[in-house]
Amino acid sequence: FHSIVMTNTRTRRIAAAAAAVPLLLVAAISVRTASAFQTRQPTAHSSCSTTSSLANASDSGPSRRTVLGAGLFGGIFGSGGSGGAAAAAAAVVPTSPSSPGGGSNKPKGPTNEVVKVVRGMKHRRLGGSGDIVVSELGLGTQRWVSLDHNAPDEKLCFDFMDEAILKSGVNLLDTAEQYPIPSGGGCPEGSTEECIGRWLRERKGSVKREDVVIATKLTGGRNVTPRNIKQDCEGSLKRLGTDYIDVYQLHWPQRYSPQSNWGQSLQYQVENDKSPYWRNGGGPTSFEDLCISMEGLIQEGKIRGWGLCNDNAYGLTACTRTAKFLGTTPPVNLQGDFSLIDRKSEENGVAEAASPYNENVGFMAYNALASGMLTGKYRDVPSAMDDPDRQRASKSLEKPRGRMDTRGWGGTLHRYRTDAARAAIEEYAEIAKRNNMSLAELSLRWCRQRNLVTTTLVGHTSMDQLKESIKCFTTKEPLSEQIMWDIDVVHMKNRLPIFSNARVGKDWYGEGIIGEPIP
Image (cartoon, rainbow, N blue to C red):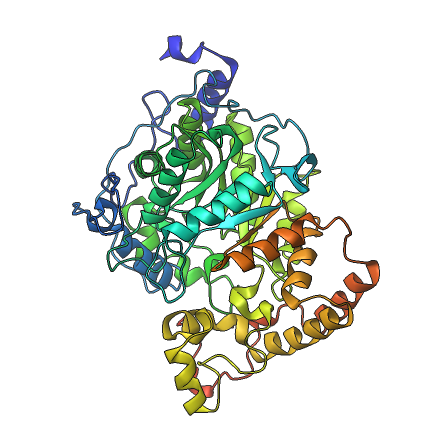
């Protein structure tokens, strides 16, 4: 052990931390044995019709799909579940940087700084990594190659990447091991990563791997254990057909957090935190184990950096401070829901924590168009779920304009259609009209100008939509101070309209529209 400890300064610091932190145990910084289950390493398949081991793994513990159900609607909402059997998993002791760019706990520059401009598209530094630089527009891939009603097929996805990456200065692809959502019907989880991998292979002569930044995510909740972090990363690498991932993120926190609540409440519930789902089997994976596991992947050259998604200021700061204490590489980004009608990250401590003057962490904004509500397509005719004209609503369900006209997405994404949200959208639409631009353009250009935001992830279902997004992010002129002020005036009327609900009934008994605790 002492011969290993003396290899470099970082390892000596980690060894010292191990003596001080009871959660880190023996055997060259081995981790505690609180793994609720292990997920079998996925294998790649050549097309959506091939069965994916990611979707059909038969392990001794729950499948990843079970984790999603239990973690999202059980652990997050507090209904709980039984913990699995504990299993040991040794963490990698960092030795010397070997990943592209290497790992370091020393910042190499301020996050969000413009490093270069490619075909009119600004590229900004992501966190303090120094060498991870992302375009202001990133391609969101959540529904790529799914069988959802208007999801892009593989040919269109290839066209998107050709247009954005080869022609328009975009370099960022954001995906996840669980994508596409929804999965199934011949397109299981992991299919989106495989689609991206096939594009990389087929365009090998046109684009260098180092010119594309791939951010992917591992399933959150109790799936986040040292063993699964490594195993799931290897599965993503195989499906993507690449030697390394640029940014490896937790899809949602490894612990209970109200920030992961996709309903209409951010209230912390101590009862949920102590539920069996989180507390059986030793409790959630510690921040120490998380940081050391990610550092092991960096030292092995499998990832360049790591980050968080659907987390909050506490989770962000706990990760950065733990990493700095241990001498490991801190996270480079936090990904979160952010739009004109969801500005919570600017006011709940995230922006302060992420600032280059504090934790120096980048921010990837998703749902900048509020799942289509900020395109204006549901203004004249409400979504099928809200339309009082049931005959017209039935027609919308038969020929959906977007996700809000479907029963599944329409129910889950209710937060973007609250009375307060729709009232704000109407006022933002008027601002856009007065300034001769679409509501979508106003929404995307506003995101681009926020100090918090490093990059905005946008999903598309047509080439016209993609080209409109590219235009928004290559327009040189920023929105005027007057436009920005007009937006703020609307915002001040209701600072978080997606968590407002004028329809709560007395018989709801503390449960929101999708079963989440309220208020």
